[in-house]
Length: 538
Ligand code: GLC
Image 1: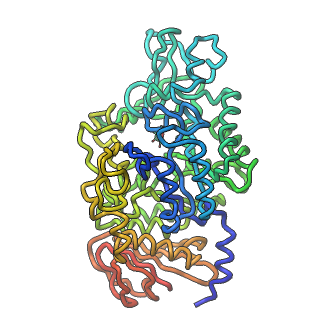
Image 2: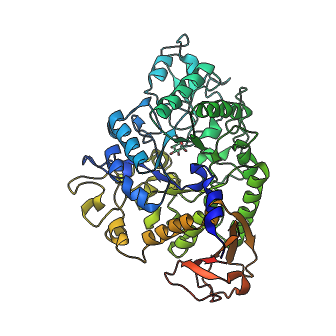
Image 3: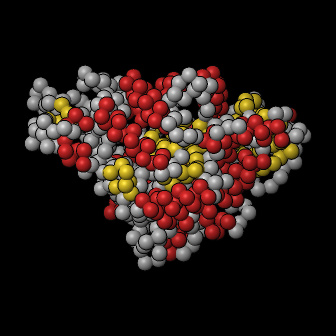
């Protein structure tokens, strides 16, 4: 054993967004304080002590701004106000104050790529070609055949262009027609959108998750995108072309540098960017000593890659090395409001293996609400489906995001303690809420919630899990991913059995077991059981 004090000091030098866990709240589904079936800010404030008890550092709230809610808040009609459904600016200030009092950070969801069509800017732009806000959005004349300007596609199906009949021009929308793309080439747009960041930072906001940040700029030539030869019918239509002119453009990097300069006007703020790209294209977005970019570009690769020990090891090795090489801090994600619940994805048997991985790899973990109690996808009957991504693409059933957005399961009472009993929650509850809920799991030391808390407690007790170096080791078994985290003389070994066989690991597993997903303390050297995750003090 070594003295953990110097290691603790080393880990303490990390910034809050490096050492802490980000917890994503989908506000519609967290806690309804008014009985209208939709979660709200006062509900969240009431649950902040729960967040504290989880051992997380920051709450990221999906959008809470004024919105017609066609995309449930990702269509913002006023960037500097709260939608009445969620409360008021006073409620928001109270939330921030309460969170800060508990030592929690607050992050907002900043949606710069597009506004709502209801935004005053777009309403002004619709007045015609001479409008002073016309150039705040992206307009094109019809193509040579008198139809669409080009073949660009919306993420939610159909073309990325809608005709404004009054002017005869099309406007660009990479999502719904009611989400027109802002024109980031226009410096006045950038200035207005930077003022939005300042507005919230002055109110005490600690950071931002930046929506679809890799889509900000489009190629100015407006050429057709090449057909994707790998696309198969049944896959979402957006994937039928290769997005070489609408994603990851050089100008976007410039806009992000400007955005970062605005964050740096304030102390200790951060931004994490939503970016679905391969690592070679992802890491150029990362902040380093030489590059004032986003502090964390979301790494979604645990979601996108096969759930296999060797595939995960290979990725973790190469990603960790690539981050070290450029001097940026890694991060990891298993779930969010756009992706099916990770428990449903990897299977119930692998749930704790995945949770352990997320909370022990080197880098900031982001946890999606409800994943700490093992919430699954919820099957939504057709008549209750509300997500436009699903409704607009009935031929791609997996496109609906409703299954992962259902109300948080707090207790076994009607409506799971999310809404009062008489209310109808905006999405149906999971069938298993009477057993899978916070209250029941709190009382059970062997529950998923207790396991989650044990993991976050270990992160607090063992700085090696937070700030320590990562290196993987050969486990000798195809199904077992083993790695070590070391800091200041302390080493922890993490053993993850991705398979259903039992494996004897020998020296790799030597040491004292701190935690097993099987809720016991196996002897040193004992075999790693099917689907077991184990953390060992080496
Ligand atoms: C992001 C959000 C998603 C939203 C889309 C459009 O991908 O995460 O929920 O629909 O952007 O804003």
